[in-house]
Amino acid sequence: MLKWNKLLLLTASMGLLAACGTDDAEEEVTDDTEEVTEDATTGATKSEIASADDLEEAVSANGGWIVIFEGDVETDQELVFEEGPTNGGEIERKLALYTQDADRNVLDQFTLTAASITVQSENTRIQNGTFAGDVYVEANNFQLPGGTIDGDLIFASEEYQESAQLEEGEVTGETRVEE
Image (cartoon, rainbow, N blue to C red):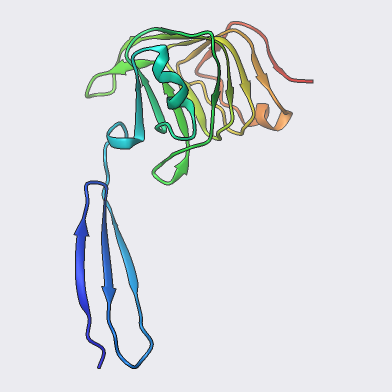
């Protein structure tokens, strides 16, 4: 008979149920993962920006899926918003240029000023606030909910431009496909 010892390990971010046993028969191992739902702005899922020194890591593949600003930030860097962490298992990145209350009402909006930012991750959004500089999009489903681009918005292909959702935002410069 196959006897099973079960061990339940809970960590702050996930639960793991592993069952192991031994016998002359084949060994069967099951992995049932309990998902622990966290607020989207807690833990390693976020990067908080208080100054330009925090930017490079935050927009890299190692940064949080959401980059939260605490005030206006200026840099002379050409930023690259790389594909990185996911939000709920979905590829997604967000520049949150605002603060909000518990009911998600926008309280303050901020400006990120940079030479440029290149978006390389699908489902990236610049939400509320202003990005002052040119934005280059190299991925599908770029979004601008409540945000402003004070500069040009340049897509690497027509496919990327057609998949973009810009209705809720504003671009002060030219919007075009790079040729």
